Length: 71
Image 1 (cartoon, rainbow, N blue to C red):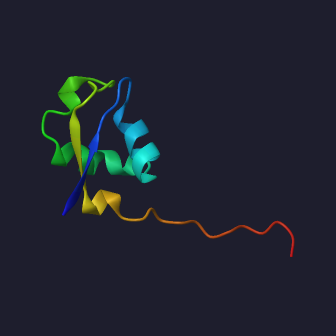
Image 2 (image 1 turned 180 degrees about the horizontal axis):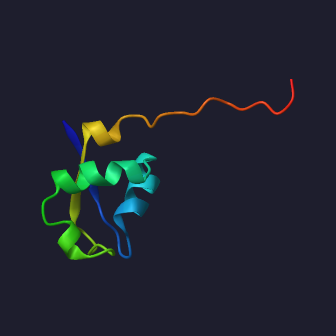
């Protein structure tokens, strides 16, 4: 299963992933694999293009343990 997101004017792939799904740059490779030809469109995507975000990329990002400076 995968989610679909529509690009708006001026959107980049990393902006869409962060804004719409809370994902970081580690998800870009999975998204590009699921969308052949997407990289050929350039860094700024055309408005209205549908982007498939695979479930593996859409899973919750890993969290870091909280660092306590003082006990």
